[in-house]
Figure 1 (tube, helix red, strand yellow):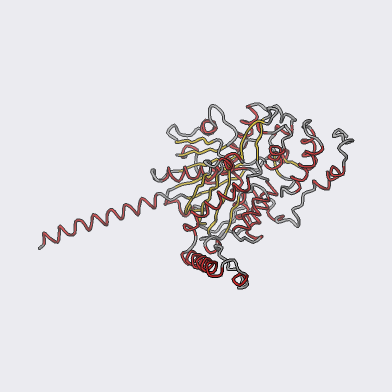
Figure 2 (tube, rainbow, N blue to C red; figure 1 turned 90 degrees about the vertical axis):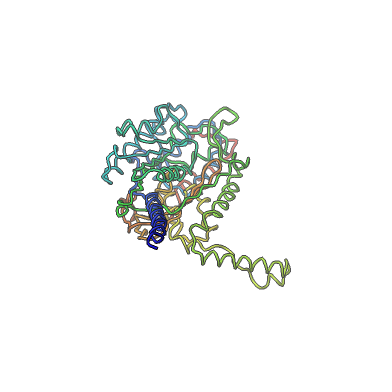
Length: 467
């Protein structure tokens, strides 16, 4: 009998041991943000109304119609006068960039933000186990990763990933790499570096679909320090809950709506087609279909299913008759606020922010961080999400236990999203600390129309851009 009991206890203990190991491994696979540092260029790189006019005037390929188009675009863009451009623009060499210009632009950001985030966290560069860099439109040899490793003298066994061509959604792609590496290695530090190089990518032609990008994109970047060491959980700012990536590259229309190419005169630029909103909507819907069950409570999912079934039943019962319509519409939309407290939206433009706001039924309070980031820093490509997050932190909105949904779009066409949980109350001003008290301003109207509105009244037959 004792032998039988002993033999029975062995598998029970083995099962408990396996369960404990599984729980321990899951805990070690968590992904935490310890700190992050958004880049704020020096004031001598600030793009005001006067400089914007001079910059556009230097393009001799533009005529009156292009001036009117650009004026309309910048006035309605939601971008203010305190955004930043690369130094090459201020030296008047934007149409003849050198490789060195792009490299220096990136190194200026790397040296500032990486040093600050590591110093503040008390982590030396030699402690970094994983480095992921994403800069879509600059590819160098050695890679940007190698340049960072060389400058900060990181360890020879560091794992590094250098991403290019991923567009404005690259931050969450880089985050996905970090998350997956963390599943295989315990107690590691990762550094995620995200930016965009504008120096070699100024478009000097007159194709409207390509000059639009000159209005939207601005300089910026962010360095993010992450770990899966559970003993550092008390120091962490955010904990990653889930991440979903959607790629519509197989659809020709989506693939070609956002693409780098040459115009008919051989000038390189970034083409934004009229099908972009449609492609963004399709990818957004598919992404939400996957992430929604992961981030919303069961009660909201059950409510949505019940309302949807009731709506379908009413349609079957009443058809398209006026009798059925007279009973009033039944709202079948999902209430995302039942599982999300804050919405961190990519600042791709005013239309992008408005569109997501309508789709998710968000208030102006929810959209304020994205609108203010677009106004202050412009579209900084993949790094824009972190400026939006920093705005929330500077406004002291982020409290322990809050959930933050990040949504980004990028060429390909891609829509990526993730959910963060705030680990502790946050209130550091980060990149906004010196000016957060000024936001939101009384108006987001920029002065471009006031300064250049006279262009609308010009006669094409007598217009002289040199006047």
